[in-house]
Amino acid sequence: MVRVSGWVKGLLGLLLVVLAIRIALPYAAQWYINRTLSQPGEYQGRVGDVDLMLWKGAYSLDNLLIIKQGGSLSRPLFQSDSIEFSLLWSALMDGAVVGTVTLRRPEINFIDATDDSQDQVGVSENWLNLASQLFPLQIDKLEIINGRIGFYNPDTAPPIEVALHAINGAAFNLVNSRDLSKDLVARAQFQANTAEQGTLALNAKLDPSTRKPTFDIDVQAKNVALVNFKNLLDTYAPFDLEAGSLELAAELASDDGHLKGYIKPILHDVTVFSWKGDIVEDDDGFFAGIVEAGSALIAEIFENQSEEQIATRIQLSGNLDDPDTPILPAIGAIIENAFINAIQGTVEGSVELEDATRQKQESENQPPADKS
Image (cartoon, rainbow, N blue to C red; front, side, top):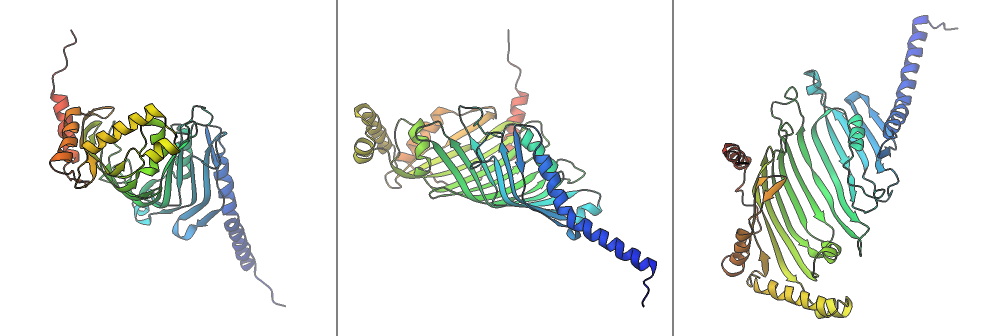
């Protein structure tokens, strides 16, 4: 009979204990995370499976959900099919805890309702605290795969619902300490689709170390069907846009809250009024029909006939909280587009962060206003 030495038995016992701990760890992590997400507050959540990959310092959360107390399960504040987190060993060797995060099919929903119990705008710090407890590390790269952002207002007739979907891209260098990165500027590149048709591209730089927002953002939207915003326009506009598409280019830069930039909205092939759509089907009535017919006439006058577009260029400057938007240059741009040169819907590359910095310096160098 073979006799097993004591040290072999001890080793086997230790291996069994380690194996049991390894098997139990995902369940313990799932319990801890769900306990964290169930903290009292305006927002709570839950998570499905938790997978641990200890050998590469990574873990993933499946079916993460954050919802407002009493809110809609069909439109939670945040949900994601999976969130994968992994450590950067190169940074860990230097004494810094830095990681990368990949979100697959993440979704954020904002709800604007008169009933506070249904309102969901994400201004509460509770859900951000929950997120910081799940991912307490500095993020070197945040990748989004097939994301969605939605806005819903149930109190209008008809309800307003607009969304961006197929959001893909990444943000880099999401740190707030020079011990982790000499350059505190975060960079992001994202693309998305609008509901019916159209694309949106965003390139951004952001410095989180300043007291007020410091950023440099370029936005380009192409071929966005106005039917995407039909309910929004039906609610707030004095006319219906029966057809057409939107093209938009914008460059915005802010240095510590001092803004410089422009927005170029361009409407293509716009149909503001149709007898069948507005009078027969919508039954708008005589006066509403007159307003819409007048809007259509104005749109026709100021449309560039060769390009079939109505466009302007709106300058922005001053304080980010209350920017200056001069009316006369915007009107002049409408006239120039209609009768002289059609405005191009491309990003000009004419606004940089340095322009906002000069705006800030000029503001600071101005003598204080006489209050006497």
